[in-house]
Image 1 (cartoon, rainbow, N blue to C red):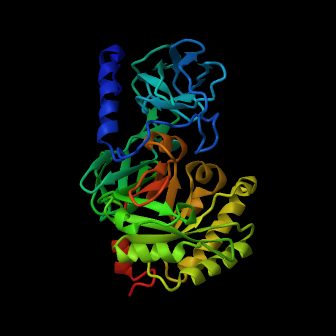
Image 2: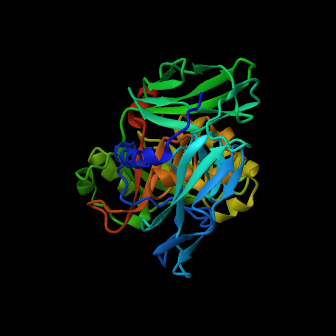
Length: 433
């Protein structure tokens, strides 16, 4: 039974909890503030030139909506010429969800708020009360046949030994049924009868939720043992003092090896030599211009030829981000990716795909990429990443303006959530015996 929430009494508690989660969560290492983009700014690396000093909400700040309905948040910025960006956050995603465009969907009875926030931290809140068609806020769900299952959060990343509670959402809304939870690999994550997931060993697995009338949905869980800090570099960083980098807290480096089907990064050899001399784990990435499956295979063969004399203990990566890929169908883009990946994987390498969160979501068929590891780029904090992307990933590029001793100017900063070095060496991949 869902109990009515005394919203005003717990609002301050909700805010405190959210602050604590931000401080104690997985990704508190970012060098930027909360900069989750609203949908009206379509690029992950959009730069604000005129910050807003005020958000003016259009319409009421307290709204009653019926379960299942949607509500479009509308606002204006001051000054009027501001090109600032807005992030959205629901303080109780079991009551309402909000997407990157400010579209709110009521999925559970109760009260909560949605917060709007600019890149400089200006905030405004909108309150929502979700009721049934008669205006009741305290409604007991009815047991019956479920048509489909969604989740409050569609995936989770947890450390070994930590737990996460899966919260299914049943459709039609207001209906529920008994469910069973099962883990595809209990050695990675086990799940209790109530849907509490516990991280056991590093890796990624699927939790399946099944109703008594055989409707099911899958929830992805990634378990990690530690967070490894990294950078990615190319000729644009110039000559790097790897001795200083090795003392800066960097655990790994992703090195650009090549681009297209005939160009090698001019700093490849010296970057590899620096990493090997000072004991820094490294991997490679190849920037693609492939416009067809045959192009992708040709580039993959060139990539393999370029890196064949090295033994990287981090993944080898396809970097796909050219603008013209956005004009192709997601199917064609995914075909190109898979053709490249299969060629490299067949040669005995641990492969990975790199692109922006927005690109993965809008320009690929992510379901077809489930078997490949993902390195996702989204500059900012975890709230911004989650506003664009809710699928699996093993690495996250969270900043393009990092400062690392030994490198002049800016450098990209990354987190890895798996011990890639241990996995690659143990399995004898990437030219390791």
